[in-house]
Length: 151
Image (cartoon, rainbow, N blue to C red; front, side):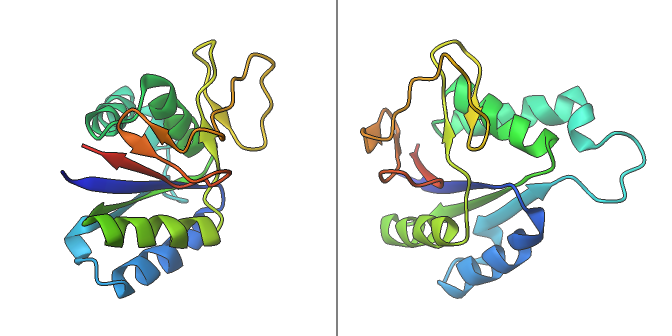
């Protein structure tokens, strides 16, 4: 089964270095992707186009993210963050997730009220899942930001 590590970075300036380090792990360039708002976009940003957000959320749910997690990743992009995706074998994806966490991937969790939770923003109805390292179709180490989706 294919696996993809996904990391949300609140500082998009880190992403190019993270991508280079992941590629140095032996990932083909075609299996590592990043998505962020261009700094010089004339409108209000890429995420202001509904089809971009819909495509992102569709891709995330296709690889195993819940709707709430997909919304949290999209919200992270809207707030100026960046996403990194690395798809590959079990060990390479696990190594990429460790690298993303070491570089500061934000902890993204789902809340029980349908509103996503991104680290740094507290929601009063949050149900945290840190104590459960394996969830349906995804894994995350305790307190780590990058998530590995199995699809």
